[in-house]
Length: 150
Image (cartoon, rainbow, N blue to C red; front, side, top):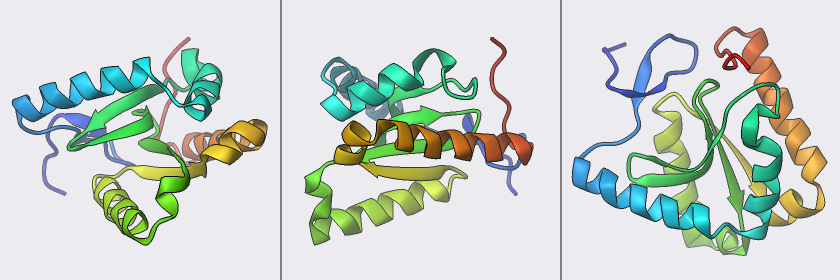
């Protein structure tokens, strides 16, 4: 593997993958991400209350985090994990294709992507969190990730 640039850790390695490119694009993405953090959807708000402050298996999450030209809903750098919460707009064929390309882009950078519907995030919050926790536990057992010290 070529030497990675600054950014997020590549799964299964001690290396880091790029999480942004051009500075002007990055500044714009930061502003958009800040707006999105200040105006979360109800589903994002519910999940964030349970993911923040290392409440889930000791892993730190960021919300509305820019990665290259995308803003992901939740990002755990230590586990190379992206969590997306999808609304009904993601049901269209065009959006589904865009989501596949976006997911491929993220996976090519060594990130795993977990997707949940907004309705599941709201109605089945505990099941969604268990699924995420199971992923994080498998990451720990495979020694590809370490939670930050408390």
